[in-house]
Picture 1 (cartoon, rainbow, N blue to C red):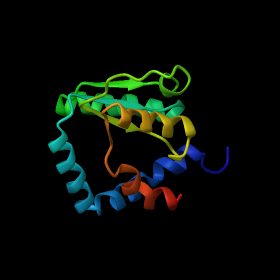
Picture 2: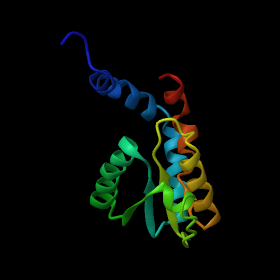
Picture 3: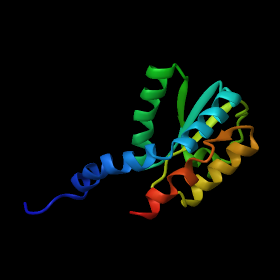
Picture 4: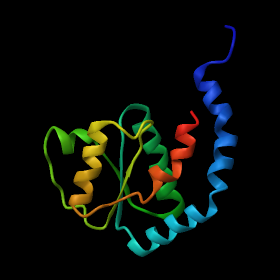
Length: 133
């Protein structure tokens, strides 16, 4: 095999991407303050495919490091089955490579309507990194 796989190339980008992310300290502090004020009783992670798998790792991180009860949601619960659960007090985190999938956008809109707080500013916060890819 010659050359580098796409996965290896993406893994190699992690230190630089993390450096850019951490350089935005004021945005991280703003998000932290919002989350502390909101004080979620539950964190719900929503994604599909590899993004959904990344949500499993996020769940372990949130539960193990800060003790936040975390669960996952399938986008089809909101889009296909038209479920409208009570999400008051829930932090709703969508993981998406593009951030433009209609089912994930709809899931986020429904979550907000049902009382959840979508991860504040995360999309905007990550936009420079997404645009550089």
